[in-house]
Length: 68
Image (tube, rainbow, N blue to C red; front, side, top):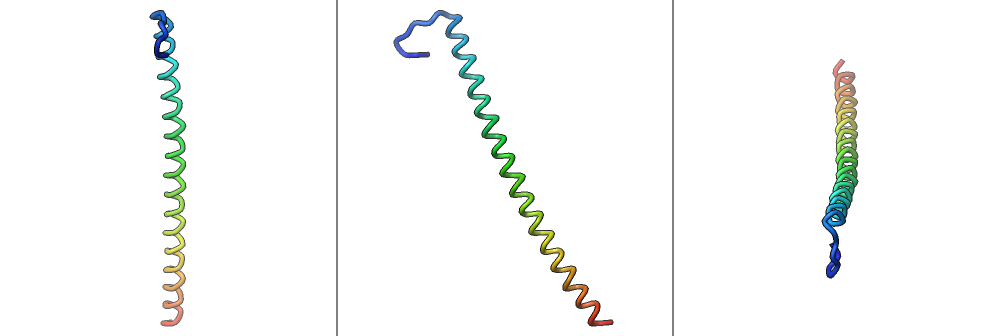
């Protein structure tokens, strides 16, 4: 509520409802950004681990070929 302003009960209810809706909307936006960041980090880690597996597979193939 605005300080120094008298509002009717219905006006107070509508103002509080709008504040709650705006807070929820802001929370959802921030949560969405956090989820996007977590997905990017996970994909980056998975890509790095796949790259490491490929290097191990290649080195194992080289070892197998040299022992044959």
